Image 1 (tube, rainbow over the protein chains, first blue to last red):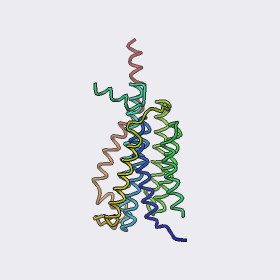
Image 2 (image 1 turned 90 degrees about the vertical axis):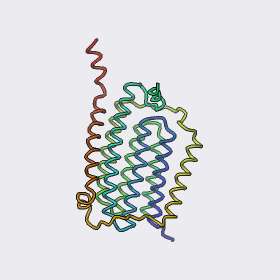
Image 3 (image 1 turned 60 degrees about the horizontal axis):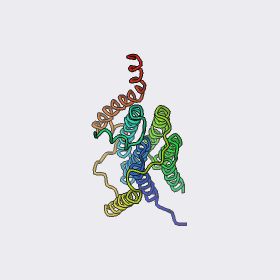
Image 4 (image 1 turned 30 degrees about the horizontal axis):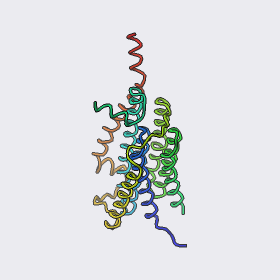
Length: 104
Length: 162
């Protein structure tokens, strides 16, 4: 049986995570689902850093970069969820189209 | 074989996270995806990041999601998406195609920086700017948590005035 290269499988995983997250960003109107899509995309990016470090033999450097991305990802989730809660509290909905009233 | 199983699990978890009608179920599938991502990190040899991803991505972030969903309430609606689905799929195909093209054409990934020390040494000596950035981000996160917790204040003030 032919062995599938590990890098190929991981790259497919990265692309699928980024693709699913990107679709969620484009297609959904629920503010919390938008944050979920963002989380999925950033997980793909962190995995790309680890794979890059693994392939170039500098795994520790890749780990430090992935660590920074994970911290940023968590803070984005916290701030985004706080924003969603405040929007729900003030506008009564999580629909991102309702936010367009801010333009008026 | 293990890599393929984990990759399939990640993809399935991600799809179920965005397809679920209930937000709570979506948050749980996101946690499953985070846990499988941590397993992939571990298999790739990145043990420290795997532990952090498992504790932060699958633990802390899930708790925050459940907390926020409980405060704001389940709002499952099937409205028209922001952009037409065929256009969204077209953009995704273009983005994925460009990624694959650049990956193949670039001949792989190349990091210019040379660092041979262990992770803490790199983080504290070579990449100290990242540490400063993380401190600023964590401060923003604290403000975000305050924003989450201050959900009921405006109503209380109005009631007091009345």
